[in-house]
Image 1 (cartoon, rainbow, N blue to C red):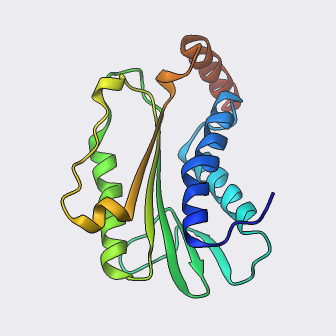
Image 2: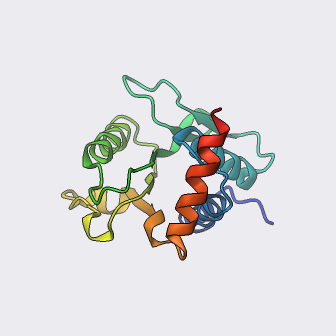
Length: 176
């Protein structure tokens, strides 16, 4: 696989390949928490950047008063910021909008503080009825181009009931 380390190509990589890998790892019972999701996304970003020494991927760096989940730097300049959410869900139909809005606040603050950031991503794994997914209207023009929301609703998986039952069994057996 060619190493991807340039702007638009890396954005597309996140929106397609990373999303597909997250879904594969969910199906393969490899993701059980937000920390697992962080590790997954970090791994795939590092893999895409290869051995380029001027590109750095950091988890939860201190940046002003915020700690975004993952930031991709080129040398010392932040280029991409990612907020991740893994909302296990108890099967309720309501998507927890408060967490989504908190993560959006971080993305906005990062963009307002660092003009070198080209794109922000909000990647969310959740379990809720589809009709309750909430996408905020982006008011400012830069928001329409700056950040992307990538939602993965496990409820949409083929064979969801069987998958969810197995996922719960595996997760509960890991904590014995």
